[in-house]
Length: 246
Image (cartoon, rainbow, N blue to C red; front, side, top):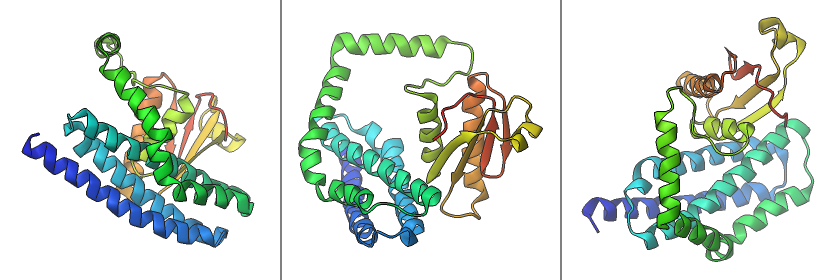
């Protein structure tokens, strides 16, 4: 193992240790089962997302050992799902202003059962994913797909899954803590005649104009790469893409 790989592996598990402390704070907030703590939960979710993005963008690509990759990947899977659950919680708090206690209990149970999930469900999933990826025949097929995409002269993003899911992933990866999609209203159609969808989002700091700009530009690039029209407004994107509303 190289010096860099060893160093980055240690950095990754240091971040996981920090996230364990976040989990305690999140459990404490969830235990109140009150919408009054929605903003605090959203901030912790954003911090968690930022830490995971650091691992993915800087450290994880340098890990070559398969056992290490597996041990890291199982934790990443857990945190992906935790971030999704917390994001949905914050969105529903904003939308409904009241939630059933069972909603909170589901997330509490998920966090409490972290080690069981990591050593069971997530380890099984990640083992299959890594085995599949490093299988020679499968890898060759993936490489062919990637080469075809690279050779494509348009700016199409390489995306997998529903368009709505990709939009939310992109927004979250650049700092959005909540992304919602709804049908465009008459007000939006005054700005874009064929407007169909309105994408809105929140960020942890309303004063962070750089973060807002990054989110909006990345979503604009993504949608335009799919040949959709886009109009940017503060904290929202108007588009003629026919997206499924939340």
